[in-house]
Structures are given as structure tokens and as C-alpha cells.
Image (tube, rainbow, N blue to C red; front, side):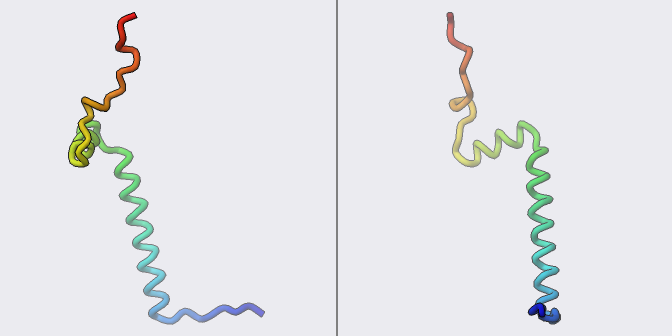
Length: 63
């Protein structure tokens, strides 16, 4: 015998809200993956990170 509770309107609304929030989070993550380089650089600057100083300089040395 399973212990399955019938859904009340409140629990159903809560599940719908959770589904909506999960879907919105997924959409935001998807959108972040397709940002332009300029947007990503601006985000770094907004965080106080200077991309020019943290740029990978491997291979720039004189041999």
C-alpha cells in the first residue's frame, strides 16, 4: 500500500511555482552561455577583475 497523498490546491500551486522557477533558472543559464565577448568582459569589470591583467600570456615570451 503506497502512502500517496492527494494534492491540495496549495501543494499543487507550490509544485507549479517550483516548476516555473526551475524553468526560469534553466532559461537564464542557457542565455548566459550565448553572451558576447563584450558582455563577458563587462561582467568581469563589474566584478572588479581587469581582463587585461589576467589575460593568459603563455606563448608571448621571446625564445
